[in-house]
Length: 224
Image (cartoon, rainbow, N blue to C red; front, top):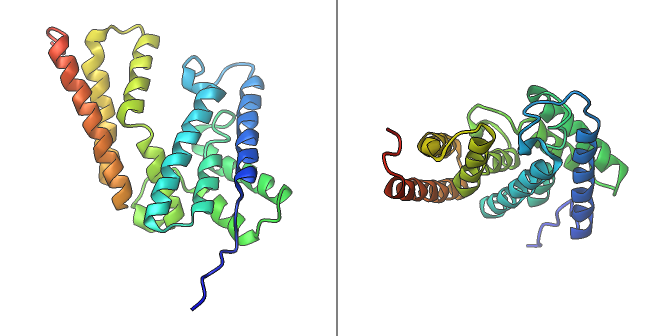
């Protein structure tokens, strides 16, 4: 029995070129703004933050896809483009807009099959889906799980602590902010379907719990 040859293969060089395009697109989106935008004064409105989030999601989605048997090329390309339009459109429109950007890019570059482009765009369009993840394609599921997981754990905690500074809060509010990260983590753990994503979620939740315990040990009257 012969080995199945996949229809699509995205080379490392092609993927690297895609990464450069996505960052340039994000940077141009910020430069075009004249009146600011959603959370304009927070650092995660920047092209640098959004690009870093995207790369985190690419890594997580790729890991999940590899272990769960999803199409890795579809998953990682969709992950790379999933927030490309985040800085230029409203939250409820950014998934559809991102799919359009991805389609235009993929159609203008290498000779990618239409079936591949459709799968990528479908995953991007549905990456904000709030329903049961068993209702979506496996590649979309991997992307959604990765997107949720990037917001929990050490990274999510660091972002919340940064937010405290921008809101002029003191360290005495740490417990409230850490609790938000935990709530987000519990929500992610309850929604993910794959064994791989569930394992990552619980690992990241442990880190946040440890950090909360350290804070409680070192900050007098925390939360009072």
